[in-house]
Length: 212
Image 1 (spheres, rainbow, N blue to C red):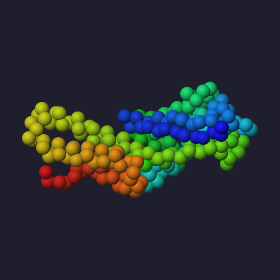
Image 2: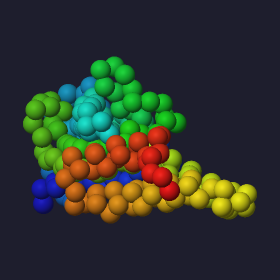
Image 3: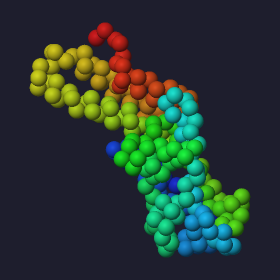
Image 4: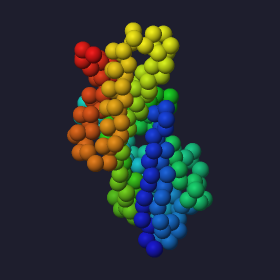
């Protein structure tokens, strides 16, 4: 069976990293996990395992990051089984024009993430064994702001709910908008999702301007 790459990607609750897990079939037939080497190695019959990331942010601007060497991300140790093929990707791993997205404690950039997972021949990086592409929405920044506001409702209720009706209405609007983004993620066009992220970001920073 030829190698058929597949990947699952999820964002952490604190929005500081993505967990990337290989779900491929066919490892060991044409390419074994023990054949994966770092990108500086050009030995025949060895392979590079890499990730390419492009992020379309809330302002509809595109960011193309340097190719990630997953052997290096894993600490530079040889892979022995497919269980080793799980990685956490932090903001400091993603570099664009010599500038990292952030530190390993910063939230990842909100937006539409286009991810390409590839196995390529070490002696000829233009030759790939297989490639897998996926997209996901990363909403950790706006999501964290919305949940921070939700946690304030209990305090506002204990204080005097009648004095905080406008703030609570604003928070519930933001929460409804966040849930709409998450529900639409698999069906909306990229441009629509980017616009929705931008709008929620503005709701978080500036409010709705509604006269509640």
